[in-house]
Image 1 (cartoon, rainbow, N blue to C red):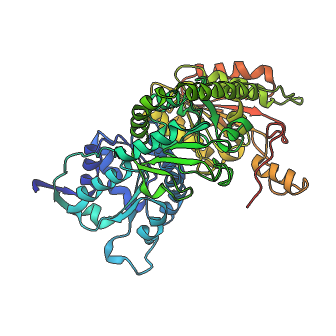
Image 2 (cartoon, one colour; image 1 turned 180 degrees about the horizontal axis):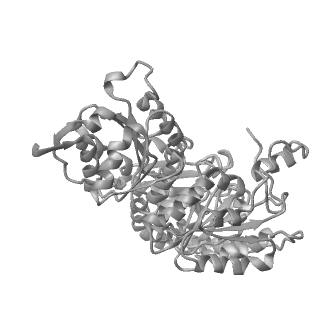
Image 3 (tube, rainbow, N blue to C red; image 1 turned 120 degrees about the vertical axis):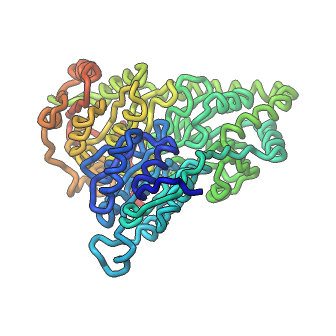
Length: 557
């Protein structure tokens, strides 16, 4: 059905985004997207923000999606698209919905090695759910709305849409369709009944909740309580459940306590809700005992049996599976109260061991530096503070957070499990725009932060309230620790010559605080939170400060 008033393709893209509820687009200006940027600027509903690098735009869209909306990023052809690739790949690995719009050369000059020409669809297809080039202006609403539905439906992930310049410049007559969302699948009743029988007969059950099951902690906890089972989360999904709940025994993955790993190794029945059994979570796929019966629920049928063949596989929304399993399990548990009591007693003992292991050790600081134990105490204070959201980048301090920081509030902690350095600061920028009533605090390593530090200027220019705590040990700490343990302390290419990050913040018009002792840390955090606008807290550590005692880095394989 055609409208009476033609408009250009770029305007139709902007109208379609608005119709799908998009409120922000993060990008970088470029030749093939200037019409679209102009259309967004004139639209009034969708806000366009320019960053200093396409990688930052992509990570901002990723953070915006995790915080509750659908993040959209924009890049021009060729090099701009390539710069965006790391964010698209990371979102694909972590099942984060994201829409990437990429300008393309006009169709009249493709396949001629024209300036910055690249096959966008072929380049991005392996790292996203769907990649498509829109070649007709009147198909913009159809394909763009399908792209949005694909990104957020099923197992979420990124979708890449290539927009040739001549399509954006041409008249378009198509009407925008209704906004449509699909409901997730429910579990098969026969599968639930079989899973309930297995779980009712278990002596050492365990529940593992991943990102796909983290959206409904009440459903997961109800299942754990009914089954008398301990529940653990996958790597960097610390706030899947309240940390103080007696059923919760921490996060799996690098830095996990032995008791957390061991309860899975000892399990005779494992219920996995929305998890993919990643390499770090499973200690390189060695964690699940071969004799254990696995009940695996996931919206993506391809995940069932990819790593561990389940005794019962449920193609289902994880929370729906948890609720159905609780209902089916309840009468079976009531029929064997002695077994139920034994399981609950076992869980109580495991929780006590976990609490003992999670007690923070005291580490001394050298002169002019901040100790990791003092930093943990400060981060725990942030985690306990209403209105604060922690965003954890990839850095050497991460295992300290994994072991000793406890998160109670839902949606108050986010970590990147995809391995992309420099994710944290831009992701927090996107989250701050998605949830303006909360204060985002990023924990970044100095190596990660300096990769994207230029966009602190974007924070200042756009008034984005993000506090960035730079854990500054003047090193690529993860690699340094591998060289320490695996290369007999031969250090090559890992030590950095950093600036004063606090002074850098002030140069760009923000607030900056430099911390060089444990005593200064608490007041510095309070000062940062009291400021309006972006702030960097430069926490100076010894250049050899690294992992908690007794923990060694996983060897390269």
